[in-house]
Length: 318
Length: 279
Image (cartoon, rainbow over all chains, first blue to last red):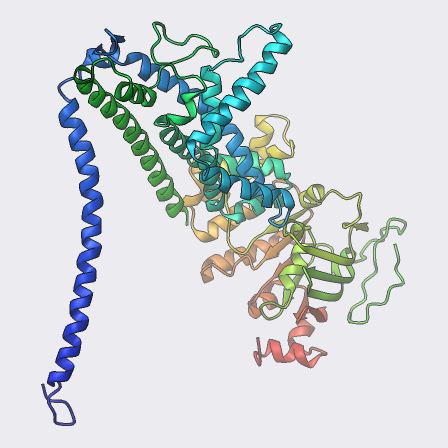
């Protein structure tokens, strides 16, 4: 190509320079692609490995029967049941409290107030606490302190609430998943246009009426998403329930709030560390992991679908 | 309340209604009286020394360049600014002789008396019916469903939108056009039975035909309501308002009968702004 000056533009020097830049760029581009590939391969490997090894043992009987013969045969129904009961109780505890915290933070507090700042700090610190610490906290606070005192006050010191139980495990998990609910709800509240609050207030509504009749109806799907995310975060956690209520094996399903329970994540831990016959347990272990993953993915999928529908609705309104 | 205050910046003097004064026939009454109002966002003073009288059942337009404080002043009349943290008002604002910033005044009750229409129409994402019923339900104005239906219909008729929506009261308000949404918002305000309406550039986001409908409606509403309207549109101010107040840099420069303001303003700043020399 001829430039206005009359010389060829692709002189050797220029060519060399552009070539080198191009190579570096290409390497970087390939690296970013390779990084993506790594994560996809990891997930494919985990799921593929678990599915291939566990599929032979998956059956209707496996998910409806109790473990037999020292966990070397039978199914995992008590663990599925315990997991579901645990997360239901946890949700009942975490959603109302988390939503109220979010409402305080977003609707009521001035961002300069001391309570706002300390709550913010507490929420972000709570999200960073390792889960085993929650387990020990649950044992010390819920089981020993709260449960022990209930027993002293109402049961004359006999052991009722002062021992590991599904209620304490659920409350411990509720504390663990609280930040998820608070942050999701806050995001939802933030997405509600301020004009709607003003419209309500301008019609003579009180702040409380505005929150109940205008803000919360708009936030329901977002709050549900928060609840589901909390469930999928809490469902697989083992450490927080280790000392607060999960049991190795129980002949009966939990019937009371003070019962102990079996749980999928804990069951996996038990199968992999304390099995009397490792070879016999292996396929059961794979299948159990598969069931837990399937449950968690299912919950995440539901959360994603709800959230995308909510976003679409917000877009339509804008 | 004091009637001896001097209003140095005012060029019109309208008799002030007080609780002791008897209402004389044919007398024009001041619905809203502001005395030396200063307004602060934190440390920034947005309004300084605003004194103004707003005549009952007339339309008063607030004009001025962006950031001149006219919207701030409007929002201080129903204490919507209370919702913004760090704001502060000094001076007095009286509505019907009542100091609205007095400790005994509940801003919630004030807002039921002084309705507000916003620049961007903001219907609730509910049905058309529920939008109008919202304030009525919240204030428990209707004794039963029949009475509620009646208030909803009357409000929609008064806002000149009944014929367009009567067959789809249960469909979403968000399906209406921009102009219809704004008239729905006016209906929603009327349902709470205010006597004063504050309008913050109610037609600025609308096309000319919708704007004309809104203006027609405003002129109709003036028979029963005191209306204060902020507008950027000089022609609109000239078309609909009886009085015009010109704000500039947080001050009320001049207020007069609209026809005089637009033909023969006393202040040079007003003339410059109205003739488009700045702003």
